[in-house]
Structures are given as structure tokens and as C-alpha cells.
Length: 196
Image (cartoon, rainbow, N blue to C red; front, side, top):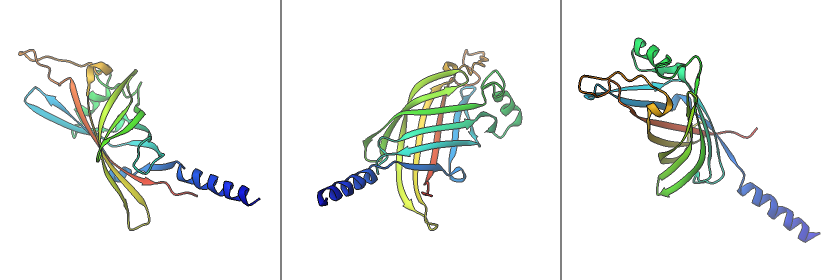
């Protein structure tokens, strides 16, 4: 009987050690922003204001973490209403037909130190492609309100034409008014979900 009790205790300790941790995206302290070249000589920046994520980690250092992230296309903001409406049109995102951009992770691997590689499927409009994203893990901290927080910087580049963001007026030089490569950075802050 004693051995059985010890076995059960060891089992529960083992389960607890590998219990999954759920994390909530802190929207007030998270930014999803992007940059595109304009007429070769300048850059235009923008961001998405509405998004949500589901993050589940198995390990203390976030390896083997599962990530699902959804962005609301209609929340795009480049500080220019006319440009924002154009981006929401069928020339670009077609927000009416494809209201969300989604990302679903396949792997999250530690490279060295604070550097990680996040691989997953990015879906824009009706196109899904696997991409690699560079991640800096900024660590964890307990805030004054009893919440455990974690911070990350996620960065990547995509070719917009591969996702049917197809508007492509050319200048007399042959260069595009809007560059094909879009760089984006996500400054993400998470809070550990409290067990009820």
C-alpha cells in the first residue's frame, strides 16, 4: 500500500511538472505593426488595432509552445483613411470577404540565448504559406497585481504578391509604387491565465 501511495504521488508530481500553461495576449501592451516601401524612396508604416491569440506552453522556457493568432483586417490603421479603405478593398486584403489574418504555429524552437525561431502557417485572404519568424524572448516578470507576464518581439518579412495583395501600379522607372516585401514586427506581452 505504501508503494502504491508513493507511485501515485510521483505520478501527480510528474503531471504537474508537465502541465500546460495557458497565456492571454495583453492587447493594451501588444502592437502588430508593419512597414512597406513607397515609391522606392520612403516607408509607410501601419498597424492592426484588433487581434487575439491563444498561446499554450509546455516548458518554462517556452519551447514546445503552441500559438494561434488572429488579426481583424478591418482594424488596419495607417493614419490615412483613404489609404486604409484602399487596403481593405479587393486590391489588397478584401476585408469583406476575408475578414481575418491567421497564424498557427508548427514549431517554436530555441536557437540560443533569447533567440527563437517560430515556424507556422500564415493565412492572408485565401492563401496559406509556411513562414519562419525571428523571435526575441524578453523574459518573464511578476507584476504588482499578482500576474506573471512574458514578453516577446516577433519579426518577419513576406512578399505581399504571394498572398494576392495584388495592386501593383508601376512608376516610370519600372519600380512599384508599393514595395512587394512587407516587414512586420509584433511586440507581444502575455499574462499567465489564472486557474479557476
